[in-house]
Image (cartoon, rainbow, N blue to C red; front, top):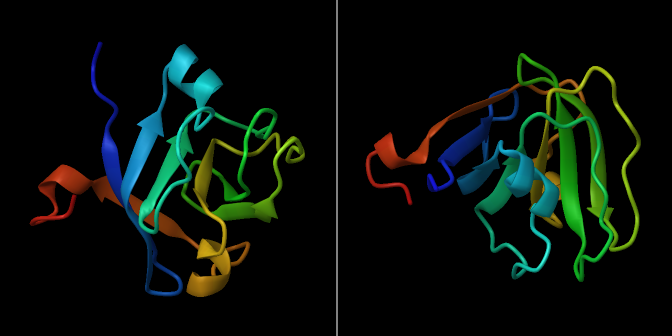
Length: 128
């Protein structure tokens, strides 16, 4: 089994770092499992689910900030502190979902319409 990729994701519009230890879930099992059964992510951690048009929080024990993004990395919708046992709406234009620790959106000022960029964190001059 191949280890999950790790990304550094920045909000280019705001000049803010969203995380430098964002794992990628792009296989059937990793997308299905998501963060279920895992500890609450620390600041800088998260999960990018590809492809994804909406998420559920069934079985989760902590809230998450969830951003739905299009193919170009534009933020289409934000769910701040999405609570356990809830779900986002379905977003047909979304390409992926970015799950971050609750409070990340507010701390970075991220808003719908912002443009995000990402790169492999392993090639980032020392980023984890």
